[in-house]
Length: 376
Image 1 (tube, rainbow, N blue to C red):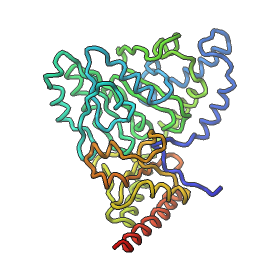
Image 2: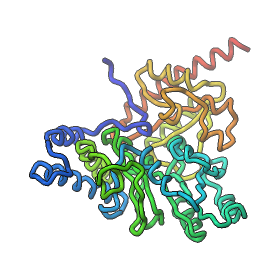
Image 3: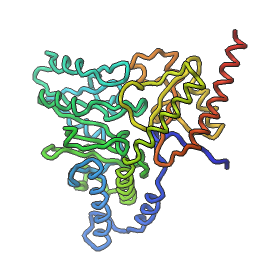
Image 4: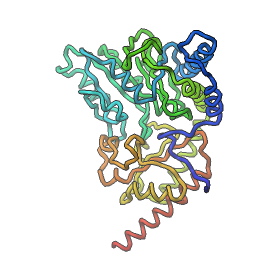
């Protein structure tokens, strides 16, 4: 098989070699972490060591980490805390697992995809909110555009209204520095596979003093906050990935330089290309753009055939190329949105990958230009 260039880290980062090694070793841990015998204690020790590593990635105490099956479950567990007496408000560009919250009010964003804090304050003053406390969910960074949201500022507004603040930090982890205390959030979601860990494992981290009622009930695992025998190998891998992701933060300038060069050369090939959220702080690894007249599906297929893996945005739509709810919330014209593709870099990205993308992309754009001339 020819060498492929993988540029879809925001969907899933490749499994890190160090993680793979430790996960394989963890498969030999025969005990149930809830058992009191030696085998059980070994498994429990492995889980707790990983819990400490995940906690350190977001500046939280280890006992505040609840392991889940992934970011979607972590978000669901967070939102399940908003019961009677609460009103849920979420930004319009959240992950679908957050947008699925029952009776949630969607908060508008600016044309750059950043939450409109003036509109949030107006909504919090809404007389319909009288007698209800606000539960606000705002992602730390958008999975499609990479736009970094003003979580700390939002949390201050929410707290002044007596509310609770949750942030989906799945895309931000390992790509920006996260500290729960500095952010001022009560709940924070993570997923291992975005940082080079295994799929099928995530975490909800909660602030000290916050009570978390279980969504999955049964036995007493995760201090009675999430029933079910822990996925020991997955959790071990999550811990290793979290440790490596924290170390990767020192490489952010290099990743930013690579992304900026990529975008400059995309504009050289397609001067009419539109870069989304380019005027606001973004994740260093993310470039989301559209070329007028181009269709995302055509570009994705052409790039894939050339050995380059990118996406059209969120990877949570059963493999379909669908209109982006994020771009719709940003009031991007449908004909432009239908051509949007996302290039996302990571710890394994090299200049050769960028060159492979630009070569294939350039050829596709030349075909587009040729077809326009024929049509004219």
